[in-house]
Image 1 (cartoon, rainbow, N blue to C red):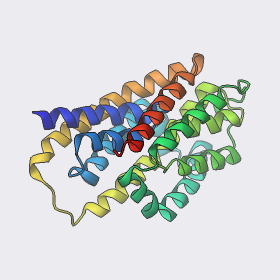
Image 2: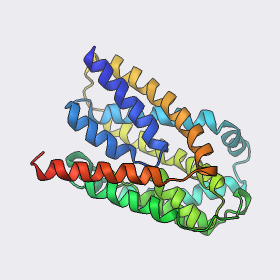
Image 3: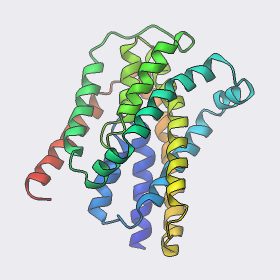
Image 4: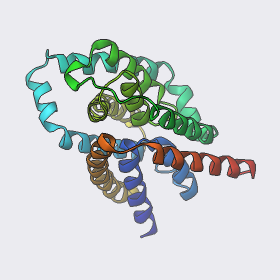
Amino acid sequence: MLLLLEHIFLGIVQGLTEFLPISSTGHLVLFRKLFGLQEAGLLFDTMLHFGTLIAVVIVFWPQIHYILINPFSKLTRLIVVGTIPTAVIGLAFEDYFEEISQTGVTIGWEFLATGAILWGVESLRRGRRTFDQINYTDALIIGALQGAAILPAISRSGLTIAGSLMRGIERADAARFSFLLSLPAILGACVLQTAKLAKAPIETTLLIPMIIGTMFSAIAGYFAIRWMLKLISTGSMKGFAIYVWLLGFFILFLQWQGW
């Protein structure tokens, strides 16, 4: 029962933190270390990402359907252009960043950096460019920032939304483009991780907890996207900045104590 509750908790953490600007990977590294769940490993990571992929598909199905029936539309081309730098960075530094994620040695500093980015971008003037005015240069820059978020506690959504705001894109549209751009990134991560799992043994006793955890990841992800789309339009991300700062200092304190 405890194992099931731990997987449900991690599923909720993944679903919420994938789309809130507070870093899903950083939270999973932290909580998995606290729970001693390394044995779930890559398989559970893959399933949790699949859960958040489902959430994106449900929320943005109209746009995804449009892309599928209009494969040469501007929106499709923007997603492709934004995905290229993400893929290049991810493939080039995959092994290095995977090692960092496993050790978690840098996540305290990365949470502090995420907080600085979120706080700093809130000082910018509100952009006026709409979704239809996003161009290929925007997509390339935002995609590169998404690739940089491969560091475990650098928030992907936080960095891409911040990049969009710095490019003068209106806040709600910045969030929309960030979440749409996450779709191929999450799908690509699932495919790469599945390929690594092809010959790996699967602990059957963990399958049910992991499946249920994945369901909760999808549900939490759905509500996180909906809430974030509303929050970014009228609210501020400074609250998230304070949260990750506190978390970062807490982790650094634990590491200083020999944790």
